[in-house]
Every structure is written in C-alpha cells, then in structure tokens.
Length: 248
Image (cartoon, rainbow, N blue to C red; front, side, top):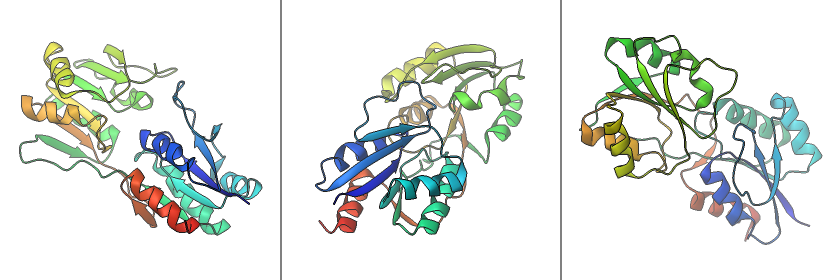
C-alpha cells in the first residue's frame, strides 16, 4: 500500500520537491496550490488548486484523502497556511515538515531599511524615495496607490485585478533574473529605492546584489514568525526527511 504525501506548494522549491518525490517508490504525491498564479507551470503529482477553508477544512481533507505525510513548501510570506497546517497535522497526528528557504542576510555594503510590514514600507517611502522598484507581489500593491509623488516600477508574474495600482509601469515577468539584467533595469528606469520582501532563495536575489553594487536603498519587509516544528532549508533536506520517514 502506497504512503500518501501532501505538499503545500506554490514555490519553485515545492515544484522541484514534487518532481523528486514522484521518483520515490511506494509514495503517492499530491500538491496543493492556492491558485494565485494563473500559470503555475508543470507540476508533478496529483494537483489540486484552491484553499482548504481554514484549519477544519484542511483536517477534513487530510482525513478524507488518507494523507500520511505533509510538507509545507509554501512561500515564506504565506504564513497563515503554515500556521493552519501546523495546527491541522497536530490534530490528525501525522508527521509534518516545513521547507523554509533561508532569508537573505544583510551584507556590510547593503543599504537596507528593515520594516515589519508592507504598510510600514509604504508609510516611510515619501520621506526619501522618488522612483521605486516595487517587487512585493501583485496582491499587495494597494498600500502604495495613494503615493502621488512617487513613480513606481512594478513587477509581478500575473497582472493584478480589482485593486488600485500605484502610478508607474507594470512589468510581467517570472524569475530567476540575472544580475546584469537587474542592474540594467534599475539604471534604465533611474530607480533610487527598491521595496522587497525578504523571500530568500536565489531566484530574485540578483536585485539585492544589483542594489548593493549601484548603491541603491532597499526597503526590506522581514518575515513574520513561523510555527514551531521540523524545518529544512532545501529540497535535498526534504527528500532526506521523506526517505527517513518511509524508512527507505
């Protein structure tokens, strides 16, 4: 009888984990996506799209599908699903692992302003910024929409809908981005400030290096607290955890 794994996905790490997990003998792999990206790419395993309806909904799903193992590989800023998952697996009594990419660490040559929320980032920008590269995801652009004295270059995977947008230009693109391309972008648009979440990982780190090399200020939104539990920093660690749990 196969063991059943549920991966809470939506990241490149989750997709790579699903691909590798599908090669493990005796393991059925399910991947759940929130559905916030219209074209998530090729995902290995059995894919479901949409929310669970909170903790109770996730508990119901875990029991109905006889899930044996859960790996939370969601985005570091999707903290609510991580807390829901931690509560649900405790109730159901199955092993859970969090795949959390390490956050970026400030280099001595970085000019960072560290804040606790996107709203705080929006609040402080008018005191020093004129042309801003806004890379925080399409769902959190609204707090910047009222800032009439700032021009924004925004980048997202999908176009935002039903939210007010800041004045400026929207680019649709999916990482990874090269250092040279990021430097050219910042120079071409005369950017003086970047606003970014501390997402960690390599796919979008080039903009941080580009800002460092060009002397551009970065307003960086730090992560919220994560639930306690087993954590690994990369896909290899998650696969090793799986093999250990499956005693392979």
